[in-house]
Image (cartoon, rainbow, N blue to C red; front, side, top):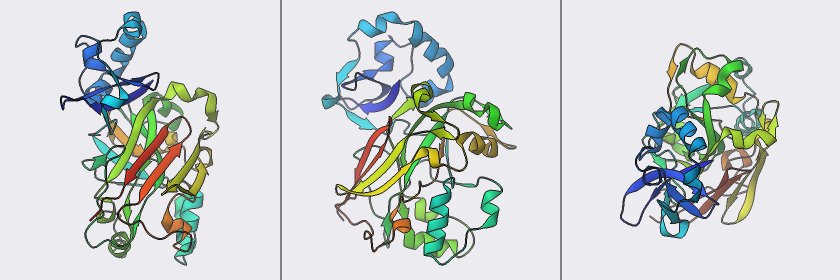
Length: 307
């Protein structure tokens, strides 16, 4: 299923799912209040709710709570994740980005998957405008895939981690590279360079929908990024070095993961301007449109706000 959050014409915001890729279904309205109004509340008890949906045959034939996509506004499918960890899991990106700065590959990267905590309160959705931070001249996109945690657990083994994943979505980890560069010289970060916005969407695809694309380290899903219609980035999720299962093992080591937490993969190889170089494309400017696409996960577009 493709789970979404959307705003109706009366201004209310509801969680639900896509129907035939043409309609938004309000899960609360369609089930006469059995399912909750928010995606976070759904995730917190999703095993029960998914079982209800699998046996609710009448839902397939009802028009209650069903709205044409043209009449709603898609928001971030999980507007308020409980946390957001972003990993550094694609080897090509790490090697190239460091090489562009005259740095060798750091050997310790191969020892453990590493992550930083980003701002889970600055989540944006499809078509939302992204404001370039004040004093930023080097605005960049990052083409990533994210998983959404659906089950509580601590000290989770990689071999068992799939049970804790609810689904996947596209993630754009917007980056103020000049701010990031300055603060990371201190030896801590990234922080302020990533603080202002992260976009996810357009929907969360449940993991069962990806079985036909499974490969050893994840899924065979092409990943692309365009700026103003020009293709800049091309990669594939299957090239990931650390699987999401390994990321979950690392994140849950001595810490409890909860339903509604968001975990990002880090940038796929060639998936940002920092890696491509400004001879390939300049830093993003107000008015630019960035379009990320990942096989099965849809297309995620955002424009940089005019200042």
